[in-house]
Length: 144
Picture (cartoon, rainbow, N blue to C red):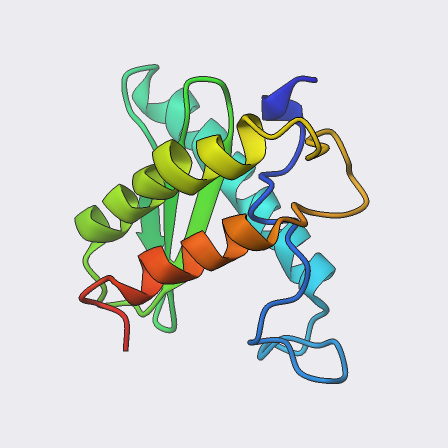
């Protein structure tokens, strides 16, 4: 499996509580459609930055009037993306994404032989992983 050619497992996770009963997110798109758009933005911006700025520059976040997108990418090519309030602290949220990678992701996904990581049809279906991410996010000072 080539992790850089497949969307981040976090982007493929089944619908979160932000998804309504009709299967649409707050933007009016289905969760899968929104995940594909976010992944496309990440790849496009990352490639643009590498071409314009050189190999040493990294794409770590961008901000619009309604949200801020934070990116943590591992050396092995896994991408962890978080959408937040536009005024959220980028450094703290990037560190939280790194903490998700070195903690719950490695523990409950990579080291778990029962988790399939090459599936393009469904995300990570591991309750321990989800509850660990929930604890990490709720423990952040920026969480309201």
